[in-house]
Image (cartoon, rainbow over all chains, first blue to last red; front, top):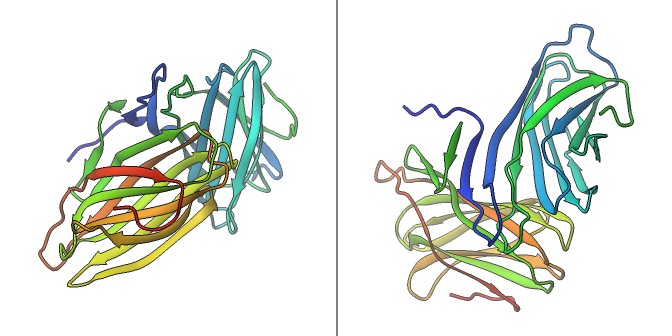
Length: 156
Length: 144
């Protein structure tokens, strides 16, 4: 049996000047027990993605025991020219959490934001898909830190 | 941490990163892949495309399922988001199974990965599959 430690990164981006892996599974795991539910809180996830011409798709997959719902959300981020562009997001019917617009932290990193009406026993993994065309759009992505609070704006 | 430069095959019938595609031009394109799965292989299969289309600003999350039995059965196809709309699976002129989808009218800066799950209960096993060839076309209809 093969047990591969996360993150599991598969398939090199082959475009000239590209770097990183095409599919990056479980770059980070959110796995928290919040006994007080953290009602109507926002989760801010600070990544190491800097806005230097990168196109990245993020995907959160998991399960929310407190709400008895699945977790699935997507973000498409165009991090370009020192701006983090919120290209599009997906929240799926029946899912527990909502993907909010990503933003740039004060120190220049891409931050994802999620909203939950509660966070009691919620867990998900974060996957990334990047870009292998003839440009510099591909990159590996990691999570630097996170916080959960009632701040609907920019925490970082 | 595991960094795999090539595809990942799990229990011989679940493969990640079978193929990767990226393209920059902005126009209406259809995308075809020709798999190594032959007609009458009895290989029940699910093919998944996963990525993002910047031009249409939509995620790519679509799939095809089929059973190449005595005659070819294109069982099902579907999508979660509209970055690519599956058109059909079909048998090539040289007897391989192909799938194709519609990337839409403004496909610029598009990328996706191909993952494949197979099973073969009638012969007790499964085989790894590959993408023999791939092509994007300007018009609909079978290509291979």
